[in-house]
Image 1: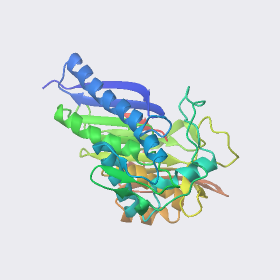
Image 2 (image 1 turned 30 degrees about the horizontal axis):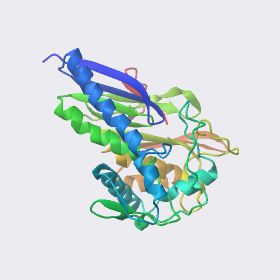
Image 3 (image 1 turned 60 degrees about the horizontal axis):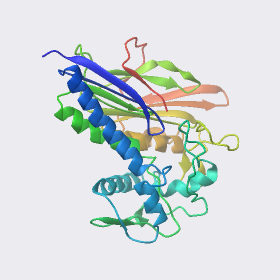
Image 4 (image 1 turned 135 degrees about the horizontal axis):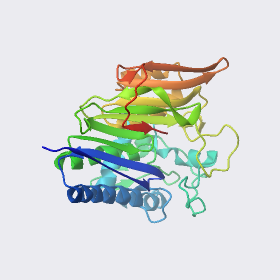
Length: 326
């Protein structure tokens, strides 16, 4: 077996997506696998982005109050979303879109799309997740509500692409969807994978500390209180909404990095950590399936960190496969 590393990066899902895998494949076979992966990614974006007027999510929100025929993938995504809300006691809620828009996150953050027309649901209300009704081939939300899959969509998608890579014979992979990274296996030399963590106090840099990934399927997600590009809002604004206040969370966490067994869970827990703050987040994350955590925080005395999990290295790591950026 002659293993080789293959990598490609493109703009998708509102940011930069990087796909890397290790396999005994020819260049043309690898290109065919990349084509399949990118088709899945761009199809997912076209169907489930709230910024696209013809997406399934947009049409679903426009049909609020009525049963809406949904695809099998949308059903799976909605079920996963509802499960995450139940798991987190409502800290994650797909119905947060009206509050998110009211806070100022309306337009797409993707370059070139900031002037596109977007449906405005800021006048609607935030419903509890159990208000989402799901049937065999239909779903329905309350008439004055709207949902957004942004809080779990990337994590869900990353996990679905794992099976494609396994079936293709990949012995290792790391898929980076902005702040969400799915990993498994090793690099082309048989070495374990490692990931650098963005420095919350210098967004163009990374920490010396790193995540050492196990060879079993693993995921790391980040969530931060950074202003989304192209959003014209007041000072102190960020896009992590506290479901108790319906406003950007008042938190001492600048960037939360969470490791878990799958990307969907890591994605959701990272946002929950930001909402809870550094005092409550560690116990919550441990009890809800996180295997590692690094919280980059700030208080009146300056910046500080909290962490748990043996996969987050304390020492400087020189070989890094990719970096995690929120």
